Image (cartoon, rainbow, N blue to C red):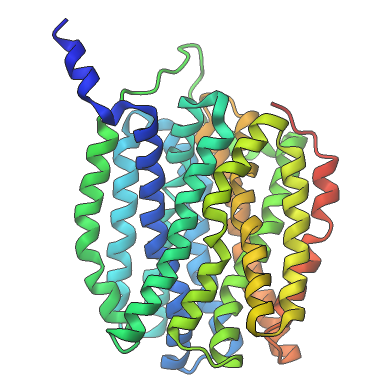
Length: 403
């Protein structure tokens, strides 16, 4: 009987606290990462970079974000007992790597430091999504969507807050920002660990075999994963191309300062924050297919609308509309992948899905940079993304999804 009061007093073990902790931590991590979009025009001007040079700069960062996905899921599956440690360590290393970028004077050193930050961030998703998918199997879509809403909040509030701080306080000195912002990250990481360590470990079937490295590549044998990989690649291509050239379009073509850039980047995820969990709940109730088809089609339409809108309120509406689906659909895609994942390889499945994003992250900035160099028009990237997304709804309508 002595153990019962302790169990009742541990609010950290409750389901809502568990979801909230992982989601808020995800949002804090993305607050730090999303600042990169606001830094990008400042870095471009500081080093007088061409379109191809800035594309290469972003590709270096994308490589850092994506390469670990080939083994981060495997590591997460092998270290299931240490998931509560992996998340705060991932977050803290993001902040410390960005702080390092503030001290480095040469451009490719800065790119390497941001790549290290993105690399550290990639070790968050496999354990976090596996934790939620395992504990909330019947409400998997909604739980993962809350996790995605956290990242959406960070992606929306991060550029907005950082842009305001840079313009109003730091005179657009991004280096001071990344150095100072590492200080609160230490306390935030400690708080995150304290919350997660209070939850009981997730029970797993004793009959499951340990995951193997080659399991990552055998996923391509299954049609469901090939289809989801294609959909995730296309969405990520559109997203990465947009994140590179939308800030540059806003700053250079439309003459916005850091506040304006931050506000418009925030629109990409702002509406997705409250609608993401609703979207995930809907996918739990009616299946993943309809939400995926609708969202992928909406992204294609929104990208084309951004290219047509030009500037002003029409551009703001097009960005906000696109952002509703661009961010939230990834959670439903991940939930669809986890529906088919064996209990011993959930981290590997998450790593596989994010590896497809990595491939898109490598290709999209380079192709978009080449297109801008040829056309001389940064808005052409919006039409390229729309063309990439156009076939995806039909493919998802015929996808062999299963629950």
